[in-house]
Length: 133
Image (cartoon, rainbow, N blue to C red):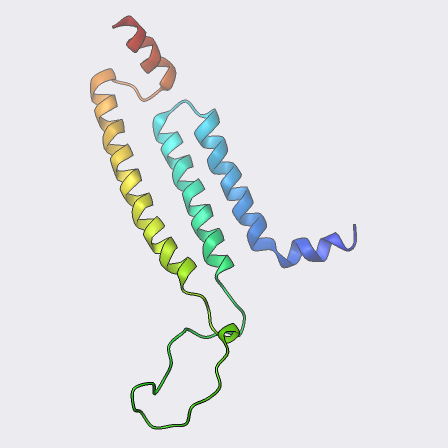
């Protein structure tokens, strides 16, 4: 048990992401209100984005831009790939943020239309009204 505690403390950010994912998943599954489900979906997506951004982080690494590469002054230093941060996870997460915002916007628009038609956002009441039609 004593060997496990430093590992848990060192990786606290991953535990935070898992907790956020579980909160979002709980909201999507257990809640009956459509807005609460959408907020849960948004929390879940944010936790995944934070997780991937933290995976792309490297201690004591720089961005992959070579200075003085186009005829500038200065000598050429030996550069290893391990000294750079991989930009791919960050770029993919920027795309995921855009998709997340678009998904949330469309879902909110659908929720507004559902409310205008059925005067409720509760799943049980919507199902009941659908079965009556």
